[in-house]
Amino acid sequence: MKQLFLTIILITLVSCKDGKKEVSIETNGVYSNTWVKEIKLNNGDKWLANSETNEGILKMKKSLKKASTNTLEEYYQLAEKLNNDKNYVIKNCSMKGDSHDNLHIWLLPLMAKIDALSKTKTTEDAAKLKQSIEDSINAYADYFE
Image (cartoon, rainbow, N blue to C red; front, side):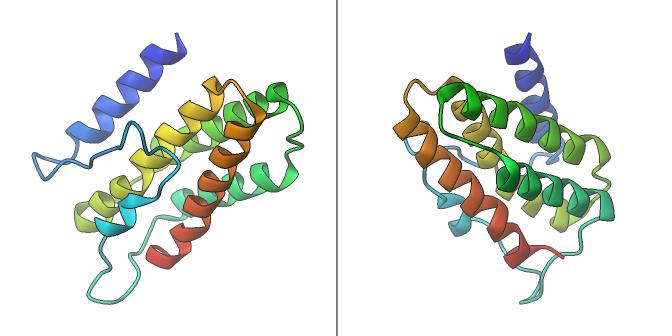
């Protein structure tokens, strides 16, 4: 059921780009943040995000900060919480145009990382994914306000 829901969300996010260039998600590089090569600023300024999107990002930051991650089960619980926070962003996003397109460039790889965290088999991989997720979430403020 989770896979079906994730697939539907990914299709929705990609399809609302109105035929513009698709964002690539590295299947073998889920730890990386190559999306920074694709994302753009708004003529040197940060993009304006709707307040609900910013609120969802804050929820993700709080989830990361509060999470105890010593066992795989705890990492899975974090992945579930981050997935719920991400779904809040998707449900409440009212951004349009270039700001929305750039949000997708940032969000789609994050979604893949959260999904990978929910399936990881070792705490070592989970720790790498958590750090990569945290790096992505912290980088949001470099591009959006």
